[in-house]
Amino acid sequence: MGEQDESRSSFLFRNLFRGLIWFAVILTAYILAAEEIAVYQKEINNIGDRLPLLLGIFTVSEVVFGIIPPELFMLIWQSKGVLSEYAINLTYLTLISYGAGVLGYYIGYYFSKTPFYVQIHQRYLKQYDEKLRTYGLYLVLVGAITPVPFSATCMLAGSVHTPIDKFLLICVTRIIRFAGYGWAVWAAPNYFT
Image 1 (cartoon, helix red, strand yellow):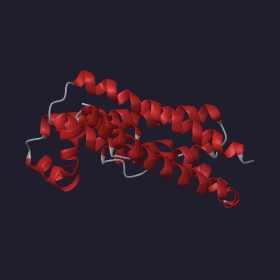
Image 2 (cartoon, rainbow, N blue to C red):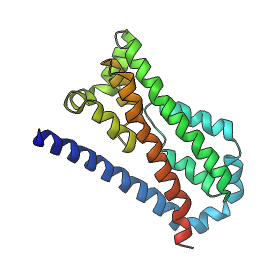
Image 3 (cartoon, rainbow, N blue to C red):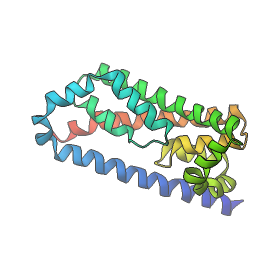
């Protein structure tokens, strides 16, 4: 049992480290480019004001395996400098991401035997099959808090008919991730100005 726990921990920490490095690179680039970005602040604010469009893009991204990092959306809204608006928009992102995970679960649960799902599985999800056998629901936890595609892990969990109550409980960690990253995106630039 100790060996499996160690492998689970190393899997989590390896992916968490990758995610934190990616996050640090995005945040550092944003901070270093702050003066250049300020020139385009009006255009960035105009983009940020298109809430339905941005949320639509983010929803599609989250359902299709998280193509666009949520931190980019956070940065757009952080640059406006209105904390209440930022917090509300971050809440939208969090709910969309959580909902996309639940949708992914049900797609896997109900459509895992259809030819369309089999094709998606072969193309995008097969690489996670062995990890799902090894880690079970732990893979969903890793997907929720690291760059491992959350929606993909949710589809796999649904396809093997993971109990929904355990699945939903583990997915709460996605909310914790968004809260932590959201706070860091909001606060980090203030440390350097």
